[in-house]
Length: 172
Image (cartoon, rainbow, N blue to C red):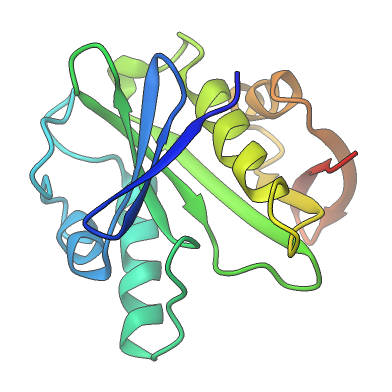
């Protein structure tokens, strides 16, 4: 399914059927970095550690004056009830045509395909842009759940990056 792209208050919104990805401003990302809700109803009460780390990355980029809108953190929401179930986003804008993603889900949302759907939606959007030909994701070697997410989303394992397993999805 192709996500429908719109904007709310200047921020990207990707409607991908059963889930919606909502871009976070640097101010909202700072709230998430401190385990705040940023106005969302979180399934397990608060964002996960990966979302908090991503919030800090956005906040740091904004403070350094290098934040690029569209290339930061998105909150993953269930469309049916609006519950926030995780975060997904980019480690920054694309470099040499490659954009790196990271993601996490609240514990209660795991195992139901939400991460796979979110990875597919954000990757599809990135690959639709002329500046991107590859989406990259890295996992710890022991993180089999994340490796299954990437494989189900169409990613292929490529050469390791330092001690991490790397996966790529390329445009056709």
